Length: 382
Figure 1 (cartoon, rainbow, N blue to C red):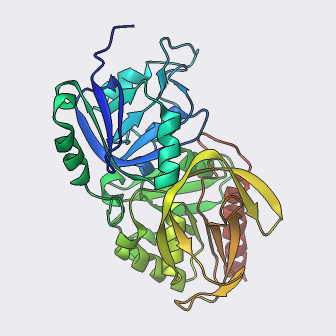
Figure 2: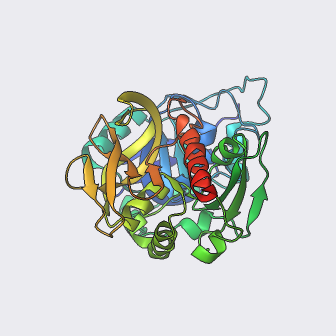
């Protein structure tokens, strides 16, 4: 392993500085700094479009030992703005590995930093909250600290950013079903992960994926059996057009399912508000209660915003879509983790049932989509 230039700095918005070693591309990157608590799945984290605009801190101390491979990628590139790890594996040892982590960071021009105290950094973010940050390496790390802090504070905040168009597909495409045909789903791509599509086609669904700026008429072309809103980055308050499109779809009582950003947009379409969490949920071990079954599930999360629902388990939609149940809640902090409409065929969850990487406790939510589609098909046949 080559000897690294030791000049690298992680500078936080509040002026706190961590010294480290350059990792990946040398230079400067800015973004909102967040931490992910998964002990595995660093490749899925890096290629998840929901992390666009963010500098990700891995709380697991040893990263890169299993390398990188094409099959585990959730998209075509690494989306994180920067990467912070404690120890980079000196060797890659896995029969599925095709290249090293640092190879991919350099290929996608991702600036990283290693050999710093990620535990102290995470505890600081847990106390203060996520904030803007910058990684500066090489010659950029030699600038006066006051200038680096000023550069960080000049960066855009995540609150108020619209990033769906950045990560979404530019052209529509189709993925054919496998096995017995069940129906077809129109997907609004707000930053979708490949594992979500795989879970749908494996259950007999033809999938039609559309760009983030698609209209309701486009999504409903060919009379799909359901519409799906994917995960994605950015502030849900900025997704005004996608919310309007969803309200048109809900009014037509077309079955709907949403994940993560899709859950936040369903919440807004129903008339609820969204808000920014202090440091978010990012990891693969979050306990969530499914109120329908009473089961506690271990789930995978990646979100910095959430839906605010005032009241109890059952509330009325402020936008006039009938009764809504808060179907899932996080047992760590009572954050709303799922919504279920009782008068129209629509539901969503804030976490990731495709679980790439992560536990598969919530994979049944794709089966609920099949159940909802078949029930709606039966009603139409009467």
